[in-house]
Image 1 (cartoon, helix red, strand yellow):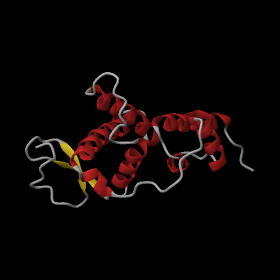
Image 2 (image 1 turned 90 degrees about the horizontal axis):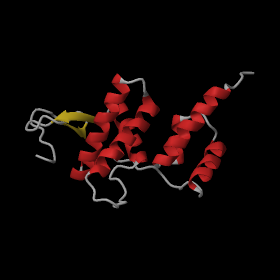
Image 3 (image 1 turned 180 degrees about the vertical axis):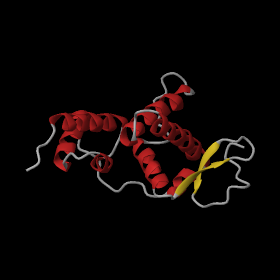
Image 4 (image 1 turned 90 degrees about the vertical axis):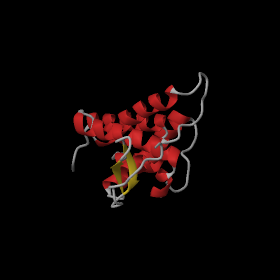
Length: 165
């Protein structure tokens, strides 16, 4: 019989708590932690004060291709990739930290008091990372501004022009 590490379980509860506060769905929590469904559902209810939402996760790379989601997704993914590559934060922890930074930047241009939902939800950000991991998306460099933008994987990159240009 394997013994469970109390410290490891506490770390996973803290990670799940942070992801719930950022808007993660239950399916994301199940994929990123080893906590049981029942435990995650109870934690979700405790933090949010309601049951977790039901339904399927968004599954379309095309959502990331329209101009506004593309710009937000490109910003988020660039931050995530930097965090995952150059900091001690890896995978789920890099996702949480990158999403926090994304929220800071996304809200910086809004007028005071604007409580609009961010363009990129935490769950979509998680899906974006999974799409990159499964080689369904890539970062392509714009030939005009030289920025890196989310694009379909295996698309020719020679004449890529971003949505901003």
